[in-house]
Amino acid sequence: MIHFFMAYRQTPAVEARLQDNRSRILEAARALVSEGGWSEAQVANVAAAAGIATGTVYRYFPSKAELFAEVLSRVSQREVVVMTEIAQADGTAMTRLHAAVATFVKRAMRNPRLAYALIAEPCDREIDEARLTYRASISEVIRAIVTTGQKTTEMRSDVQPNIAATVIVGGFMEGLIGPLSPLSRQRHEDTDEYQREVASLADQIARLACASVALATARVQPLQRRDA
Image 1 (cartoon, one colour):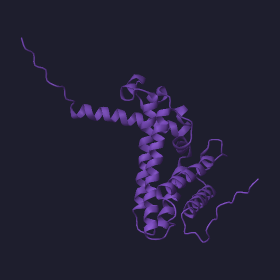
Image 2 (tube, rainbow, N blue to C red; image 1 turned 60 degrees about the vertical axis):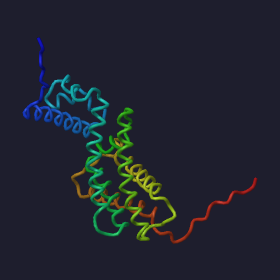
Image 3 (spheres, rainbow, N blue to C red; image 1 turned 180 degrees about the vertical axis):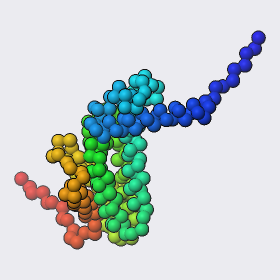
Image 4 (cartoon, helix red, strand yellow; image 1 turned 60 degrees about the horizontal axis):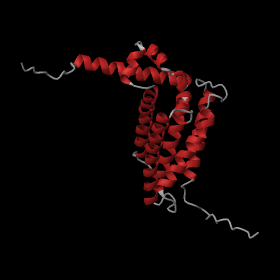
């Protein structure tokens, strides 16, 4: 007797339920990371927050590291989209560079615990790899702005755009570590004073980023070594 087996196809209702579970898991993990960093988002905690069994989480994400990497990827992709929109907007290249960096800083300071986890918190290798991808994507946006600025002679032409982008991204992310750190002083995000501090921080970091590619008013002479 010959048996014929038909491939099982998930119904739209089943597919929707599976997708809903995945989204709930990711949203629960993101919320927990926002509250206490990667250490807070243990799988059992994520399952409880999502209202599902712990085993169900592992059906979608075989390991905690894979879950964390997906959370980082989703959140960081949104930041890349925002910066890309700024990079493609009207205005001079220098104006767009300032706006892109300042916006990144302001958005990070809206959710400092999550931003700290994405940028600097010690993590597993899988998360670190996703973090490197994130930085590379942000660097590509900055590189495009610098390339345009050099073509329009707004920015110095004696530096390679990819090197300038790497330095700029490394600079503003490093500049955020202190303000974002959980060890920083108690924040009061809902006060006008805090908002002014954030605006000032964003402007200062953005101006320093712009200064690194601004047309030089005086050439820096290389340091001459003295013979012993």
